[in-house]
Length: 181
Image (tube, rainbow, N blue to C red; front, side):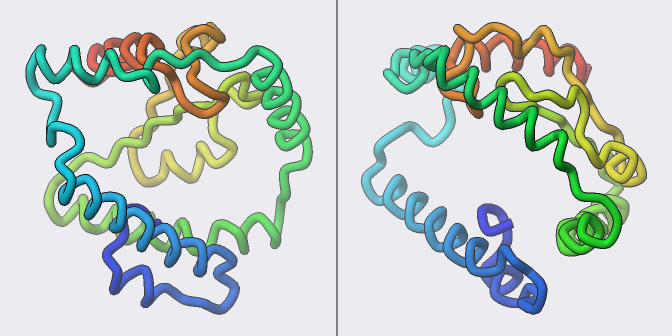
């Protein structure tokens, strides 16, 4: 929420029981500082909207990274144990209270402007769950797109355990474009 929320919404969020309040405030300032730096220093083109920009971005070292196989295995094992220890009942509902509060607000705003609300599930590497744990809740609000698992099985297409590298993101983006058409 701190990444995308307006400052007045970040500061105005309920504090009692909101275990991510301080993190959201920190992220809000961090993201705004990074945007300020980028705009001030004009480090990268604003939008990669032509072949020159595409070539520039695709040649950056960060996009050529390939994740370490051992890190990916460790992440997979962590994700598997996390999936086996899912909270249900009161604790689960308590943790989801604030995210779904804002999801209701987003849905209302979309309906007001006749916009289809679509959720895209992108798992991290080796994610044990092929679909989000809260799939039924998300489907109440809008369409949920679940990519095929084979899009994420190639370790050579991951920069780290959470981010696709250039080749992986390029393949995923082509699939998503076809899915949305």
